[in-house]
Length: 181
Image (spheres, rainbow, N blue to C red):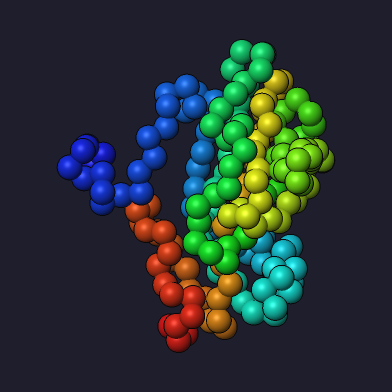
């Protein structure tokens, strides 16, 4: 009832085609404490190094399941090469939660004119600048691909406080360059 024409401007709104929703299951901002702890333990030092030994803030956590519904080539919006339109300075970390081969939608990026597919075992991780890296999800031909994606930003805050229930229509809650709160 909130997504009528009058209220669209008050929410982050994506008008996904119906067939896209039949091919992708998406969940976000799940049990954040658990996923943030996992991320800090496994990627914290790497990300701080990338951000010149500064802290970082996890802004969004997305869990994707790309489904093949017909045992044929499954094309969806993520199959088009694109750069994301997030705030500058962000990074994405994509982690495969299942083995990914040529047939279940590997991440692909362009290196000049060459396309590079990232296949790998469960746990394979890709760190990239989503605003500058032309990327896509390959078509899913068989099975499905399950992945988790973290959107992170640098922060000058030494102590970060995450809200348990972040409103869905809010992108960034705090200025990362303000004083600690």
